Structures are given as C-alpha cells and as structure tokens.
Image (tube, rainbow, N blue to C red; front, top):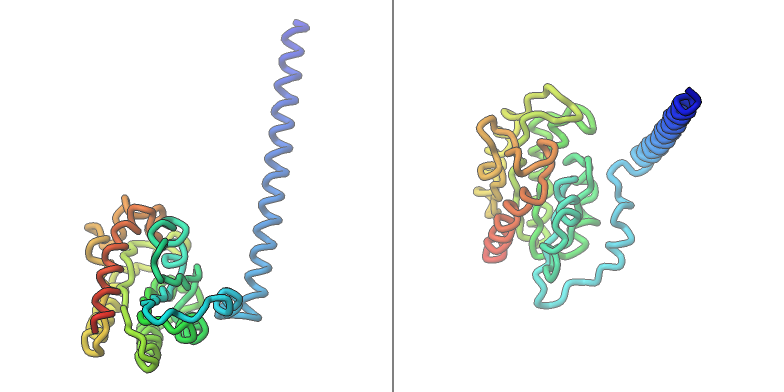
Length: 251
C-alpha cells in the first residue's frame, strides 16, 4: 500500500509539474504573440509598406558590375521563403530577393523604387497578387490588383529594366481566410497579366499550369499549407524562373 501511495504521489507530482510547464509555456507563447502583434500593429501604422525592411541592405548592396545581369525578385512570402527553403539555388547568381511576407500589391508598389529601381537590375521578376485576393490589407478589386502590378512593370520599363510578370500560384482556399473561393479570381488575373505582358514586350512566367491540381489548387506534394511552396514546389519553379529571366535578357 505504501509503495502504491508513493507511485500515486509521484504520478500526481509529475502531472502537476507537466501542467505547470504547459501553462507557463502557453503564457510565454501568448506573451510572444501579443508582442509580435503589437510590433506589427506599430509598423503598419508607421511604415505601412515596410520601407525599412531592406533599407540598410539596399545601402550596403554595391552597384552592379559592368557585366553583371542583376535580377531583383519582388514579391511576398512566396518570394521571401524561397531563399530560406533553397538557399543553394541563389548561390553564385546575381539574384536579389526582395520578398516580404504578407504584402499586397499596393505595398509593393510603394516600395518599388527603393527595393527595385534604385538597385539598377537588368531584370525584375514580379510575383504578386495572392495576398490581395486573401484580403490581407482589406478588400481589393481585381482592377486595382492588376493596375498595381501593371504600374510596377511600366515603371521598370521606363528605367530600362526588363520585366518578368509571374502568374499567381494556384490556391484552392486560404488557411487564414477560408471560404473566399479564390480560383476564379486567380484565373482572371493571370489571364489579364498574360495579355498585358504579350502586348508590352514583357515575359509572362506561368507557374500556375505545372503546379495546379484537378481543383485548380496547389498540388499537395508541392506545398505545406495550400498556398506556400515547399522545397519540391520551389524545385518546380526554379527552372521556369531561370528560363524566363534568360528570355527577358534577350529582349
């Protein structure tokens, strides 16, 4: 009986300790989440387009060499995450990643001069629009999304930068904003971007076709959440990107 009592007490102590750890862990997580949200709220009110994000890096980046074909990748978390998921792909290439997670086309347009034009690339690759459809900065009309992307592209052309316009990747549903039915909007925007690129001597980069499943969502083996590519997804995108950049440099 005494041994049983000892084991019962030990078990209760273990459960109590585990519960305390979980409570403490949850409290720390809530505190960290609250701090992160507060920082994000402050930034959105004081630097809505996140112009500060690459300010120091842009200053440190030297001017391109005479024979350098610098390429700037302008985008959101899909572009940002590329360097994290497959850093080897960027080694030895004159690619400059200027993706910021969560951004919409309106935010990208505001930072297009410091993060693209001022870096004097030969090519810019624009991958944008999915966060607008998800409503990250409020409801955005299709015309505004397309107009923002077109404005970035035409600005680049004005400064002698070749343009690659990327299709929006397939999405069947956004995990953080379910029920929006993005498939028709993605199809419509991609169609219009393709026509615009063809009419304005730009390269249209179609990620959608090879990455879409039967529902017109992102193939399950190419993503971890239905929106963002995993390493396998980026491996599909990489040769398409390189071919598009090569085609743009020849224009």
